[in-house]
Each structure stands twice: as structure tokens, then as C-alpha cells.
Image 1 (tube, rainbow, N blue to C red):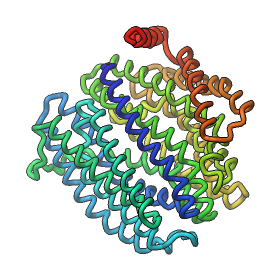
Image 2 (cartoon, rainbow, N blue to C red):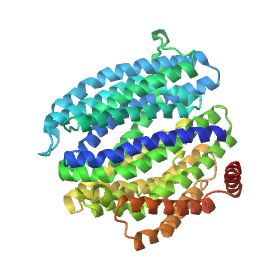
Image 3 (spheres, one colour):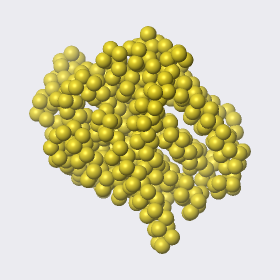
Length: 508
């Protein structure tokens, strides 16, 4: 495993992630204060996009794998045929999706409850721009393959950072200089995606100078090959949408628009943690794919082991901090417009699955590179169907309301990641069935110990402002890092960290 490349890629990816997280953190309370109970519509619009991506993913989730493997096996003509075929197929799909998107925009007022403080035209414009952003991202998605295939994810991060800075600029100008509208969020996303597309196109020219888009290289056989395998990834995404992607829509239709917004806000921090997991796992995906292409099983297993430990080392800290400081955080963040206790409980239910899945996140890529996606897809969609059915039953027979909507997906998510995922990944890699359970246990121990270490700060310090929260967070964060230093890292890894720290101190 190229540790230097991993370090560079991870630093760049985490920086891009941090910019995105900061923007969301600032944006939510501003919009909620200006347009009460309306922010949830941004989440609903994105869920419509997620539903459309179920179809798109049948083609695009496998594109990076196939193109990368062909490049590293020196099969240039095959790689170019996949590249051109994916691009033109995406253009065709964008045209097809344009018509249902316009239908949803026109009739959105008949589909959902629109709060009195919000404008129907504003909601329609929001959906229009978010759908337009989706269509642009479909057409330009193939250009992100270049940085993936060459294991240069720091370039992908640069494009993301440029896009997020563009989004921040557009939102700042709109909300500071003009009357507040929700559609600014969608407009800013379009500007961000265009900038990222231009950057990715530039990187494609640099990393893959011989790769060209030519209509004569389009092959229906290549599309069918990708779709026939990628269709199971679409099934997977359908299951994931059923598991937790419909929460805000169900809340709007069956409870109220206020409940929709409350659930949407409560998911913000869990989604940040989940996206951070995906960011870290994504750093290892190119090297896993390359190792598999070279049929180096030992190297592949080493990459997975390192990825699991790094994931636990980083992700256990925000999970533990949300568990301990969550109520205080929500009180400071949106306490003027929302009930902090309610948000805290919903956030814990949202993050519950991550207690198990955080330590084995990279295993999902194992199913993709080994082309064993069918069983995983069936399990996820099955648990998704059970989730939706159970939610409807509980909403009709109990008074659990929002807690039923969020809690059910947590229960099924934990069961799936505890029973199926580690066992099937071990089967796909032909290793012992219990291989990955040690990582799950390590993750739970890490989270538990950090909670115990930082809990006194919450119990004995009156955290009544952001300054105190940040101060406590810094001290608690240092203690959490020390816990993970001894619990998660192996002896050799601890020595390597200490040597790097000593070298830095000697230089200064």
C-alpha cells in the first residue's frame, strides 16, 4: 500500500469535506430563522435526486472499476470505449430525466404540504435548480474517473473545494444582498457543479491525455455489460433510499411539515459523520481496485485492515462526541427554533447504525470489485422494504411519530451490518468468517471508552456558549485521540506516529 499517497489523498479529501461541512453548519440555522419549517424541502428535493440516481448508478457505479482495471492492464482501446460509451449514455439519460423533473416542479404544491411562511414559487424554483444540478452532474460524471484511476484523489478534492467555495460565495451574496429565498440553495449548487465539472475535465486532460470522447467508440455492448452488473447497485441504492431516504417525505405527508424540518435538521450531524466515513473509505477504493486488478490478495487484505483502523481512529470520536455533547450542541445551534432534546434523540437514532458500520465501511467496496453485488443488493432492498412497512404500521398503531420513522431504519441497519455485511465480505474474499468482527468490536470499545472519558465535561461543566463548547471539545478531543492511540493503533503504528512527532519537534 502506498502510504504516502494515502496520506496525501486523505488530507485533501478531509479538507474538501471540512469546507462542505462548515457550509452546511452555517446554512441550516440561517434558512430556518428566515423561512421557518421550509428547510426540509431541500432534503426532499435531494431525495428525489437520490431516487433518480438509482437508475443512473446502474451505469456509473461500475464505470470507475472497469475503466481503472482496463487502464492498469494496458488495454487502452477498451478503456476508451468504456469512457465514450458512459459519456453518451449519460447524456441520453439526462434528456430522459428532464421530463419527469419538469412534471414534479409544476405539481409540487399538490404533492406536499407547503408551510404558510414559504412561497410555492420559491419551492418550485428550488426543485428546478436542484434537478438541473443533477442533470449537469450526470453528463459530466465520467470526468471524475481520471483522478480515481490514477489514485490522485487529491485532485478530485481540489475540484470539490473550488466548487464549495463557489457555492459559499453565491449563497453569501444572495442572502446578504437580496430578499431571502430557498431556491438560492439550488442555484448555488448548480454553480458549484459547473466549476467542479470544468476542474475535472482539466484533470482528465492532464492525467489521461490519450483518452478522448468519440461517438465511434460508443458500444451498446459496453453499456449492457456495465448495466447488467451495475443494476444490482441500483437495487442497493433503492434499499438505502427505503431504509432512511424517505424519512422527511413520510414525515411531511403523514405527520406535518414541522416534523419534516425537525427530522431533516436532526440528520445533519449524523449525515456529516456518514459522509466523513464515505470520504475516508473512498480514499482506499482506488488502491483496493488496483490491487484486485493485479490479483494481489495479500495487498488487498492489508489495505482493508489499514482502512478499518484508520476509520475507527477517526470516526469513533465524532460518534462519541454526538452521544455525549449532542443535546448541548443542538441547544446552541438551533435551540431558538427547535426543541434540542427532541433533535438529540432523533440524532442518536440516526447515528445508531454507524456504531457498527463505521468500522467496516470499506467492505462495501469489496462487493463491487469482486462483482459480488447481487446478494448484498437483495439484502439491502429487503431490509428497506421491511423498514417502510414497519414505519407505516407503527405510525398507524402508535403515537411514536417521528421516533418511529427514524428508529426503525436504525434497528434494521444495525442488524444488517452486524450479521450480513462482515460474513458476506469474508465469503467474497475467501477468508475466515470471523475476520472482520474484531474490527467491529474494536470500534464499539473505542466509542465506549471515549464516551466514558469525556462524559465528565458534560456533567460538571456548564456549557452555555460556543466558546465553552469549542474549548471543551479541544480538551476532550485530545483525550479521545490518546484513547484511540492506545486502543486502535498497533505497536508499530504507535512507534511510527511518535517518531514523526519527535522529528517535527526536533525541526522546531
